Image 1 (cartoon, rainbow, N blue to C red):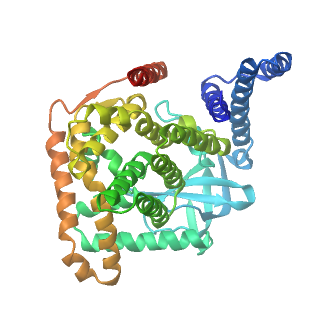
Image 2: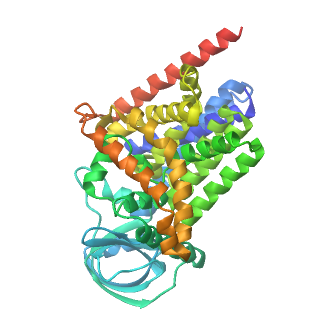
Length: 481
């Protein structure tokens, strides 16, 4: 067994330890002692010792999860819950405006804690604002059996406040680089809104920045029904598919493979930076880059190992992501789908012409959706039957509209009239997407609602998926001989 394969199994064992302890809060100290004794006794038997170290890695995953939870429970802010308090904090992320209220993440530096504040929409607050806040501190409550407390804890948020008294006492107290990026992002958003009419402007904002606030709820529902809502999120799946399409587009235009690869990497870095580099986008960007590296060197198996290793690194810092961050789950599963299933679907679609990257788009979309389907059903209780078909007509255009939209937004920074003059192609593509989603969302067979899908069902689904891939790969190996 090679060193890389052993390391791969150790990483999987660590993730399994976090996963198991998320559901069963047990102490494995006694098992750790037995495992260490086991390793020493069978030290000369390499394969047995590897199993022992995998168990050791598993226990380490359990310990990491438990230590992180303990840190959450012992946070200094927790002792002030259900009390009227006054504190000074800095807005640590861009506020998320709703219809009548705004959610503001505030960092209290002297307590090394964050509070999520729900305030009235006006007056507006911005990243880096220093605020004096007075109100009742509350603990996050369970919402329809959803562990909201743990969900917020994964982002370092341990308490909430509703409509407290807020006073702005300073500005520009955030990270200077992040302030510049967010300020530039707001200028781009304003440029888009001045050039493009609604609801097309709202969709373009969502494509760029993952902000759905200006998309009407009725359209959000239609995107859900047709399985196309992923285009409005900055996810690993979205960034990876777009980056892979850009890579293939550059190759189609006659660029050398090395040039196309570096252009695609540059695009990801530029894209993540320009939208303000939120943590979700940073994770998605890392995964997208790793996937492109694997595709560039033509070693998808090594790509899977890199993806799993990057997951381990992220989980070392925050083990709650594995269970409580659906975006994290979907991003990794989508990329693993592209690594393992996309080549299989590509072989099956051999006779489909690859004009305008149709074959690649269809195979990539099907692969990503197959790998994410069990988690989507478990979390949202819905299957979109027409998703592959609708995505086939939409995903190939996302790269084009993203690039053209960025150019348009930059033109709008210098001249709004000039931006309006060049806006027709972008408006046309966005209108086409709306029309297509609207038509397909009305189909009676568009989606099936599935309730009460258990986690055991999710595990079984991935076991069958793994066996299916293993069977296909085994047949390929037999054909070679």
